[in-house]
Image 1 (tube, rainbow, N blue to C red):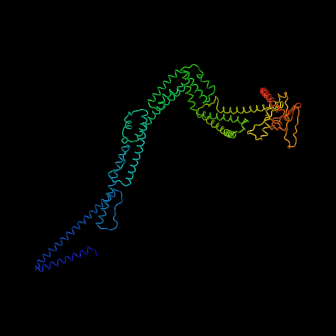
Image 2 (cartoon, one colour):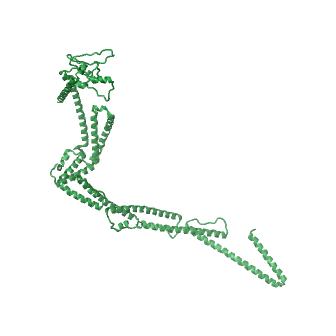
Image 3 (tube, one colour):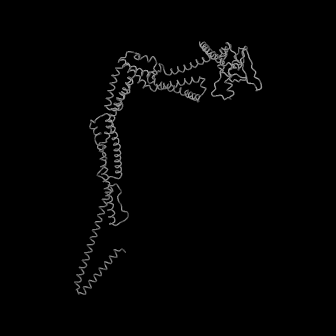
Amino acid sequence: MRRSEVLAEESIVCLQKALNHLREIWELIGIPEDQRLQRTEVVKKHIKDLLDMMIAEEESLKERLIKSIAVCQKELNTLCSELNVEPFHEEGETTILQLEKDLRTQVELRRKQKKERKQELKILQEQDQELCEILCMPHYEIDSTSVPSLEELNQFRQHVATLRETKASRREEFVNIKRQIILCMEELEHTPDTSFERDVVCEDEEAFCLSLENIATLQKLLRQLEVRKSQNEAVCEGLRAQIRELWDRLQIPAEEREAVATVMTGSKAKVRKALQLEVDRLEELKMQNMKKVIEAIRVEVAQYWDRCFYSQEQRQAFAAYYSEDYTENLLQLHDAEIVRLRNYYEVHKELFEGVQKWEESWRLFLEFERKASDPSRFTNRGGNLLKEEKQRAKLQKTLPKLEEELKARIEMWEREHSKAFVVNGQKFMEYVTEQWEMHQLEKERAKQERQLKNKKQTETEMLYGSTPRTPKRRGPTPSTPGKVRKLNTTTMSNATANSSIRPVFSGTVYRSPVSRLPPSGSKPVITSTCSGKKTPRAVKHGANKENLELNGSILSGGYPDSAPPRRNFSINSVASTYSEFARELSKASKSDAASRILNSTNIQS
């Protein structure tokens, strides 16, 4: 049983006790029955009025609750519709009071959400308005009278974030452009003369409108200033180049050059004015030193002729180069020619550099070819021979490749310009072919000269005999002290002895006996002599004998296979008359050298 029901029963019991107590009191007092009935009626009326009042109040409460439920339900539905959320539905059966409480709670929650969305919308609209005014962009389209949905607020927030990024990027671009504009204006000494330029340079950066149009105008202004700056720099640089050229032509001393060193950098208006004054001064000085200037220009013209591989005919075509009438007209002709040559060289610089590279490679190739035919290269000191062979092999590979590259580039150039590319007055490939042909002819001529020289030498040796040549040693030959002492007293050089025999012994060539090493130390050395004349075989046999031994076995530089029948000189006799022999030997060497020069001249003729 509920407590309310228990209390209701207790209330009835209390009412019954109260009525019984009243009856007892009335009996003790002696109140008649009719008065008791009246008094009981009054008690009933009071109790009934009280209960009716209480019931009326509770009924009123119920009506208020029902009305509140209806109002809350209606407002809640409206709020859910505005907030674009699902309507509220009570789960299960509930009392009126609980339903009213739940609905009232939901209404308060939806009101709070609506308020928050409206506040956020207002803030976003204010930010959007501020950013759009700075960026000169249209405002974001959204209904400010209605409650925005979460999706709409999210899109609005993203739009505002994009505007902030756009503002930041444009602000950075504006600051950079503004800094460059200020630098250009300072360099050009330019004062802002339009309202836009004043807004850019003088006004606060935050107040500047960052519209696309203004940014484009800023970029255009910067380009105009940069063009003016570039033109000014080009003019100043041209003036400086003109000054340096005039300095070189007029041979201005370093002291005068240092006086204008301060204006040799920069491009401000005062610098440009100072440069122009210096050019005017030098031009006046040039007119006073016409001959020196023209000769300096001619040196530069000759250099460009060499760079452009001009032929003699092309050089002679510029007749003013050879004129001796040093006038202003001649100077103008030379100035025009040097300008033309410079432009011509710059346009074809890559081709000329390629041709120059081929020329250098070709000269190196010819040098290697010359060294390849030089017998002295086999001395190979420091590994030079191996290095040269590697370089020569590399050059033999790269030179044809370079020729092919130049041929392709020249053919392309000739198609573009519809004329031939000439080097030294002829087409480059014809020039290359001619160089190769001349190289081959030179090789054939050198080969024929060597063959003719060898033939003449063989004929001379068959007639007059050959001079033995001792091969050169690269290092000292180890020997004992005894042998060194003997050689110092008894040995003479092969070339000196042979060259002196003919004049000392009355013109006829006689060879000293050739001694061979004995099979053993106990056996004597057998020497043989023959007549004064010898065969080529005998000459060849004794041409390269080297060692000399004092015991009569071997003689360095001795004459092979034959000895004069009338005279037989021993080693001791030669050694005893060494001083006299040396004097005769010196005279014989001079006479023999003169005879060899005469024979060489006759052979060449």
